[in-house]
Amino acid sequence: MNVIIANKYEAMLDSLEVDIIKKITGGYEVEQLISMFSNFFYQRMILDITSIKNYKDIKNLQKLSMALDMNKIILLLDDTPESSSASYLSKLISMGIYNFTQNKEGIEYLLDTPNSYRDVAHIHQLDTLTQEVEQRVVTKRVRILGVKSLTEQAGATTLIYMLKKQLSLNYKVLAIEVDKRDFLYFNDKDMITTTSADLGKHLLKDAEGFDIILIDLNTSNNEDACNDVLYLLEPSIIKLNKLMKRNKDVFSKMSGKKIVLNKSLLSTKDIMDFEMEARTKVFCNVPPLNDRVLSKELANLLIKLGFSNQRSIDNDVKEKKMFGLFKL
Image (tube, rainbow, N blue to C red; front, side, top):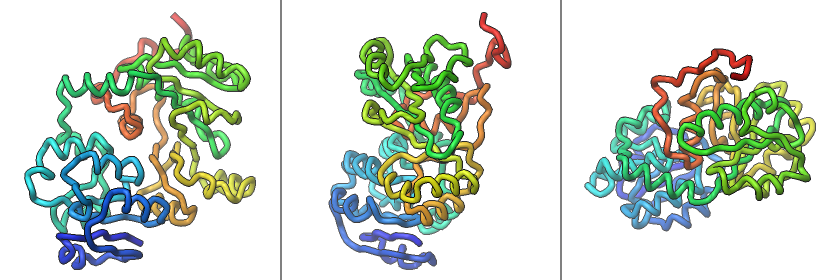
């Protein structure tokens, strides 16, 4: 079921043939919309941009993007130069807002085929100066990103290795594994192993030397040490049923957290159905990946996390050794 928030374009939105669970009309402060819908479960939201008071100030869209899942929102733009310019659209894309249009046909298309970053990348304007400014903003203090598996063997260790390899093209990255020793097999001096008790010592010692620290939390309870945590689910039936058997309230406890479907072959419709059944939100859907090459899917995930300085990976970086079986 869908939500419609209408104002100037109410007549257009009323003509859509979609199932509606809730509709509101008028102009609202961003904080009002966040309060109404941050814990409201819906499949898609069609949002008339004129419903947002002072929408021409891009900071209001930024507030919205930080509180709501923009993958589920279709933004209906107006025709004013301020909110339909290439510069304005580029800023929307930088905030992870990819689904926008100015007409009914565009809404109907995006309902069935939502955009990913690659669909709007040609609009995205990132000149050299903008990249340098964004780089300084992101790296003026260390970002600590934790990864924790909710289902068994959800792929946290390999995902961190791939994230580190991709981020290392533009940042200085350290990866820390807690209470396991699987990092040993990657032959990377900047992937280290520690215990829950010693994690704090490593963070204090290594924070100055790196821009980003990735932590494989495993079974430890050190989420508070991280700026952000990704909670991994492998969404196969058997893994999800095992998880629910162990903890039937797991998804209610995940409210507001970043859930990532990893090694996932779910379609957009499957994900919407999962969100409705579990009453939760999916932050990103990551398909099975080749851990020997860079990934556009991971680039999209990193952009959503705020790491907007992503080198083009159309022509992939070749490894010196295909399988990396031996150290040089």
